[in-house]
Length: 81
Image (cartoon, rainbow, N blue to C red; front, side, top):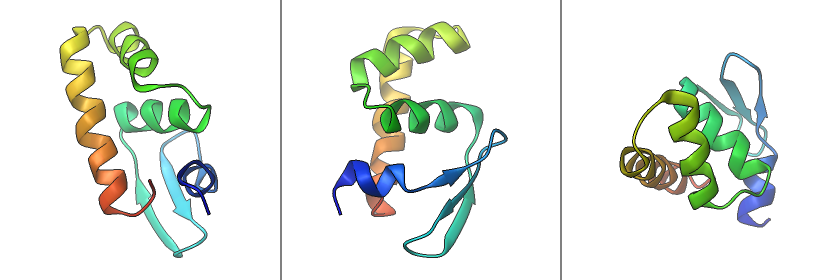
């Protein structure tokens, strides 16, 4: 299963509750993580996600990029990417 397939297989509700059917694990995403995850699932690259994050949460682009880098690292640790 590819990275995008694994990430796309997550069942996520609008409040950020996520279920990983391949592991049976569940977790809660905050609003930032939810936006990043949904954008990754939609195939957006990190630069476009940073712009979206900066616009949605009124933060500077560098902060948005750091948030994305940190969260993508967590997804990799969880073997979702």
